[in-house]
Image (cartoon, rainbow, N blue to C red; front, top):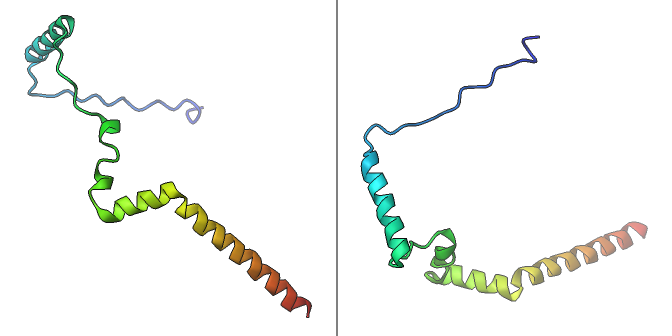
Length: 97
């Protein structure tokens, strides 16, 4: 029965050695006070704020995103699908002869 009652591994908890908890508490109190007074500093842009910023930086990436928005990928996949259908039809005709 030892197979069915396996113990779970011990959880990982990392505690920093050189952390000034008092400084962190004071910073939290200051932030709360600024928020109550309405003088809160704007937060740094998150992941969504910087998404797409570098696409305009290079010509290759910009053209690729424009082509994707214009339907270039759909058009190329459509052409490939039509060519495959024609290829299969020709192959069937050659096999029937």
